[in-house]
Image (tube, rainbow, N blue to C red; front, side):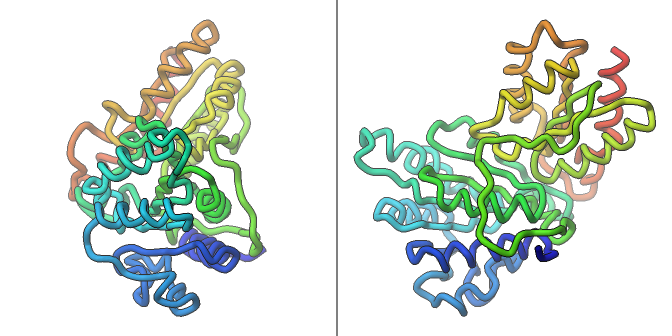
Length: 325
């Protein structure tokens, strides 16, 4: 295995995908010779040429509309939206076209070869136009898959699986972990299953659930809780559409308690869907109310970023409240 950070793992996944399948085409704002604003597409144009890795105009709706067309014609289109905050102009193309292509044709045609990559979340002092977490908007849309990796190993395996999946996939990359998260990654070609959560750490007293950039946060909170004698089971959801309800429910059957954390605001965040589903299926096993530790119901602030973001101490407070309920 090689030791690499998340950006290197994503770049390697794109390289492998392009090398193994000539239908794979990468495009977006500044992804060509510049390698993207975070350098995730570095050297791909140099290696595969301008016909397979190229810059687009600064028009997100046009990027996804073009991607829909490519995918409809059998290509494996990998479109980059430079920041997840910029994805909203493309919202119509994604939810009304990408997600419904197969359904409205009765399976005569589809855009299953579409993958949309985009960095999301805070932690880089980017302010309210470079820090949002919009994954819940798309989780409300049948016909899409929504995937969020937590480390380099996950990023490479999940991205390769996303590119090859027969459904349109939104791949949200936690940008504050791009260089902060590093680890051992197989250098070869491998895929990780979409729609399956991973139990990162087993525990007996409480279940902690998160995805992407919140995973290191809840892992730290679980370590702090151990000092109080509280054993937490830590679950990385990995995919929020579809999400692995069975994995979370089985854990809650065992622990009787659930705390969910995400960066997006509280109201309408995906934690609400998880809480509702687990309450319905695990009601008689719950020892305390399901808790959510999230961002605030405000625009993402620049100077108060640390106060806005859910951190390990906020999660620890929720853990203690749940156990002591």
